[in-house]
Amino acid sequence: LQAQLPKMAEIVSKNLQNKNEESARHAIGMFIELAEEDPLFFRPSIGNLCELMSKVVVAKQLEDNTRQVALEYLATLCE
Image (cartoon, rainbow, N blue to C red; front, side, top):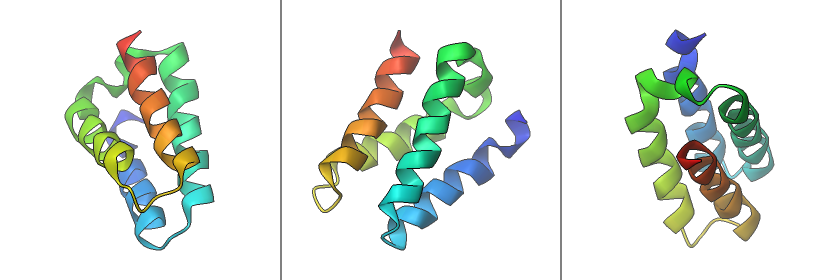
């Protein structure tokens, strides 16, 4: 499954570009659940995912809930 991480991140990105924030939040929520169970799962794509989530956090045009869930993902990895 680790090989699919770039595609999974792309889905989040495309959902955000298409203004489908609910789907993006759901996908990021799944990332959070995975990170709580096995944070090392993300190791091969950690740089790209952290960059994506960082961009989401600072994107003022996105809903606060979307930005918050991206920050939660980053915080979960830090724990």
